[in-house]
Length: 123
Image 1 (cartoon, rainbow, N blue to C red):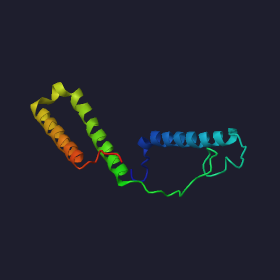
Image 2: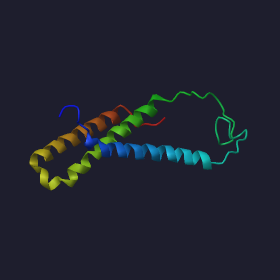
Image 3: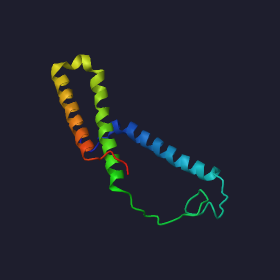
Image 4: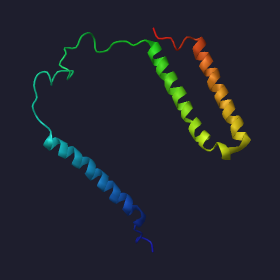
């Protein structure tokens, strides 16, 4: 009948959402009530280490730092793709094997390119 539809399928989702929200807010409240409150000058300073900050807070990093970070992420993520392939190696057949060989060849070409551009040198 029109107008009498109740989305019963969403009830578990609503219950889970209420429990998750209650757990999150309860944890924050519990921490707020039990935490120690003893502020002092060093603790309220910019850094909790107690050391006085030196220099400008916005210092410039070398572009090389970012290039090495990006290369690390790229090669690390690419290596993660090898694990599912290795697990299902006996079931995937020759086509997937050739695709993975091409994938590794592209990775090696990228590695050689980065090496020739001195992207791995840390100054």
